[in-house]
Amino acid sequence: MRTSARLMHVKGGIVLKKLLGEERRQQLLAMLKTATNPIKGTDLAKESGVSRQVIVGDMTLLKARNEPILATSQGYVYIKKSTTTHVFERQIACVHAPDDAREELYTLVDSGVVVKNVTVEHPVYGELTASIMVANRHEVDLFIARVEETGASYLSELTDGIHLHLIAATSSDYIETAIAGMRRKGFLADEN
Image 1 (cartoon, helix red, strand yellow):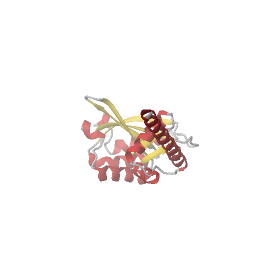
Image 2 (cartoon, rainbow, N blue to C red):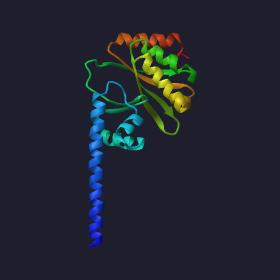
Image 3 (spheres, rainbow, N blue to C red):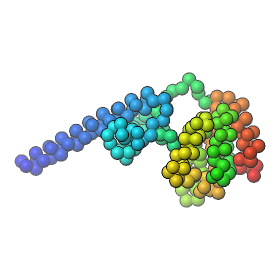
Image 4 (cartoon, one colour):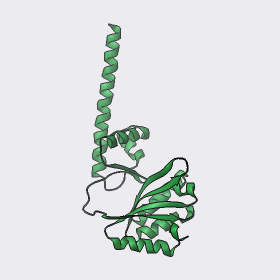
């Protein structure tokens, strides 16, 4: 009898925890859907009264349910259907020193493109891709500040500065302008 009551209590605790977790995930989803800017995991954790690691787990569960959540360097973003669709995309091969990352990203966003991600070819792990999602100088500055404040390395440091960026724009002219700017500054890998 005691075992049964204990199991029932344990089961009750699990159900209660899951319910609280599900309520929290629904709250997080609502916050992301209404946000106009990315929300950092630490901010979501404070708002929800849980640790950042719990938020990471919640985001993983929501993504597993096919919620269009993207983890960027600026925070979590809910990908909404946009009226501004970036119908033109191109992957470009780049090379530069870590100190040139800001100038490279400025060159791209000043041309009217969104820098969606960075990819490197690692000798052990193969292709490694990370989301960047910057579209203007302010977002570039936030990205660079995050790298600097965390002491993180750029993925391109794994490959002597060689990397790919997926860029997107509403017009192929913006992409061509971005490539021309990268060429002028010597940031295109195929021309070095």
